[in-house]
Each structure stands twice: as C-alpha cells, then as structure tokens.
Image (cartoon, rainbow, N blue to C red):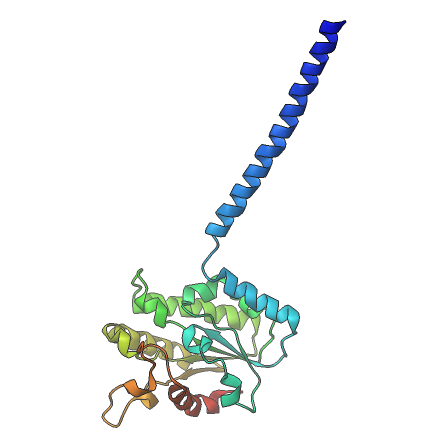
Length: 237
C-alpha cells in the first residue's frame, strides 16, 4: 500500500511538473514573440499609431486639407496659422519616403475624407541608401497618387516640389529630374496640381537662399514657410 501510494504521489508530481513547465515555456515564448515584434516593427509604426490616437481623441473634420509627407511638413506645426481660413490636418512624419506613404496608405487616408491631399515627399527617397532613379521615385509617387484617387475620386491632389536643401546639394540633379517627371505626370491629370516652391526660395541671382534654413541646412525657418505660403495659398481649396 505504501509503495502504491508513493507511486501515485510521484505520478501526480510529474504531471504537476509537466503542466507547469508547459505554462512556463508558453510564457517564455510569448515574451520572445513580443520582443521580436517590438524589434521588427516597421518604420514609422509609432508615428502612425500616434495619428490613430489623435483621431480617437478628436474626430478629424471632413472636407479638410490633408497634409502628408516628410519633415518639411512635420515641422510646420503651426501651419494653420499660415492659412487661417483653411482647415488643415497635418499628418506628415519626419524622415518618411514615398515608399512609407504607400505602405501606410490605408491608415493615412481612411479616417479623413479630405477635399484635398497635399503631399511633400520624395526628398528622402532620393538620398536614401537604396539610391533609386528618378524614374523609380516617380513610380512610387504614381502608386500613391492612384491610391488617393481611388479612395477619394473627387479630392484634389497637390504635390509640392522637392526643395533644394543646401545640405543635399549633391542630390540636386536627381531632385530636379524627379520634380520634372512628377510635374509632367500631373500636367494631364484632372483636379491635380504641381506646386513649384523652388523658385521662390532663390535669391535675386537664382541661388538657393541659405538664410531661410536652420543650421542643419535641411529644415526651414519660419521665413522659409512664409515663402511657401505665398506660393501654395492659391492652390489650397
């Protein structure tokens, strides 16, 4: 009887150990998956989640002007002050490329129902390590343009030309090609505009004004945005 009782205790102990080991390893695997996901989150995932949170906290107005793109728009935090008679929703995220706009297209477009989408993006594509050609950058823009047009057939789509940042002078030739290709592409599109902000950023000799840039010679001072406002205002709906 003692032996039988002892065997039962051993069996129960083994069963208890196996169950708890299974739970332990399951917990370890769960932590591993969480860690892997945290490490492998796609670029700008947190930025897009932040936009979603903003939309949950306050429903975005319909028929607004939606700004999308990279840091030149992201840092224009007081953009509504420059266009006081317009309703502008700024959902640009710094460092983004057209490939990122395409990746997050649904998240960036779904909640807003805008009457106009204004895009400043492509500058970071040109300088990225994958070194795309001007034709490839145009292809990325076409993809996003078609997504916006499919989603909002009646919305105006405006593209703000790539600026010639002094810190990126070595890339100006390909930036000019990209600007020209996108301009040509939009020329024959209905309810679409190419907004050239490059000329207004030049001095009287036709050189890019460095005094309107911050020390990094990449991002702009308020004076730069004031120049943009003069050019962009007639295009905003």
